[in-house]
Image 1 (cartoon, rainbow, N blue to C red):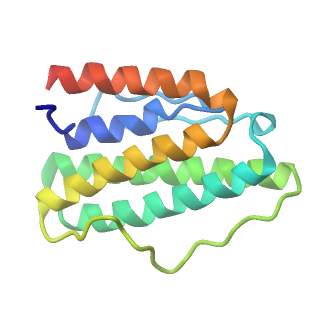
Image 2 (image 1 turned 90 degrees about the vertical axis):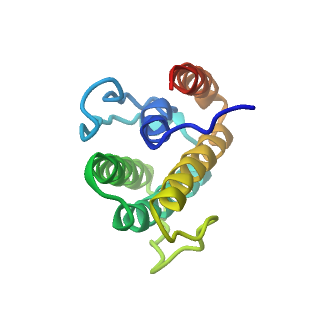
Image 3 (image 1 turned 60 degrees about the vertical axis):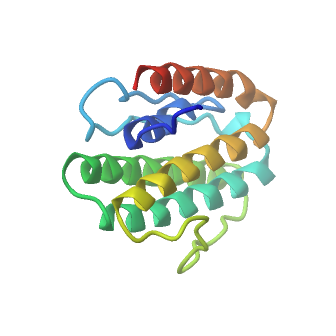
Amino acid sequence: MRQKPSLAVSICLVVGLSAIGLAVGGCGGSPASTPDTTISSTAVDPVDLGTLIEAENTAIYAYGVIGAHLNGPSRNQAQAALKAHERLRDDWIQAARDQDQEIPPAAIAYDLPIEVHNSATAESLAVEIETRLITVYQSAGASAAEALARAQARLAVLTSAS
């Protein structure tokens, strides 16, 4: 039976999702470290930019809910992930502006795939959100394929180590 990745592993997917010209780091060090991001706006189709912005807005909302149900190092990891997703969203927004594309507004709330009642369900939601982001980034275009393969390989290594 395959073991579910830990919260730290799922948050590392933020790093693994270094798709589409995105350069991120920070999975090997301190749990609260936040990755640096740089995005090449020419590597993503305009339609995909809106999709990426919406996906990151959903992740930001989810990590707000997740963090409210965690304590200690897990909460720090969730806060770091939230900040990383905010930076990614902001970078995608800038990329959309650079291409004179419409920027989808953030919703007030989002339907989350898992109802969060405690730390266990909060961690399950983090894993689900990051897993769904892999799919979104994969759909963003062929240029994401290589980075996605690296993300999936990193997840497999981290999962087998835990």
